[in-house]
Image 1 (cartoon, rainbow over the protein chains, first blue to last red):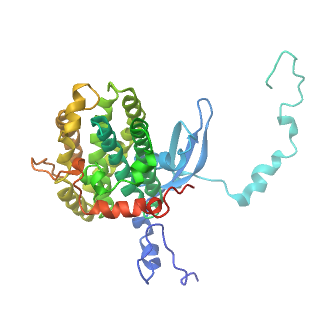
Image 2: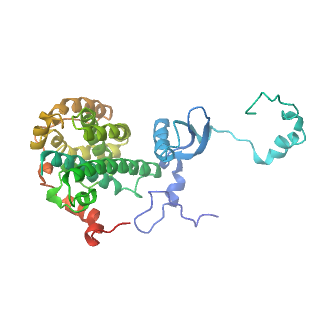
Length: 122
Length: 249
């Protein structure tokens, strides 16, 4: 169905005519580096936050690429990378069963206590 | 002009010319991540060039600015190493040249941190961290490609066959370097040679490339005797200032 769509990848645009689509489809895993998810800690004491993803041949390159792509504007002091395929996600179709039962259980929030005046920053 | 002026221009021109060569990859890198990585390095080098030009301009006085030094001098007045103006044939050439120069530049700045001239010492200290990363990034690529596929290895060998005729120029002391070294304002490059070889050698070994630094070398960049490539580079880089003198944006 999508056979008429030519897929070009960054830096891989043919000089003249032709289409890279067949080639790219058949050798996707061979010609593309694996995808990595990048997590950056913005400053001491805060946790690592997901900032995006990138391609790299291995973990060392992934960290260097993350440094060059995601910390150019002083965003971070620490980088984590993990192969995207190693991340397992919950299924959005199951969100009703997974999350809605919690909706009517407000008593799980610690909001029914009187906080003494001497406690601040709560 | 005095020795220090010439030395500052040499340091600045090296950074500017290689920075410009690298910037030619902007939008053409093999993958987006590396395109950005090399552009970052270009910007680091451009920043270093600016510091040296600004210092040279402040000493030179009337009418001389960092822009006039970068954009209004002709080929014969540029003092960069010849190897830095060579056009890029492929990514392998780019990363190998970057590694060989960055490794030299690292050793140089490491010494210049202790220079008797406060300005030079400060610029060297600030630049050293940038260059340390340039070394790390380019070294990684030299090893990957040298010890990579048949094709990448072939290109790395071809690149070294060109570069080996030029890198010896790093270690020839110019007249101003000899003079300035006496007052500890410059580094005698001859003293960096052995250390450089001892650092580059294991990297080539890991990349399974043969490394042998020959005695003969192309030279003349310090004296303004350049390859034909610099003229084309300057024509593009200086076009705007030459066509619209004094323009700002």
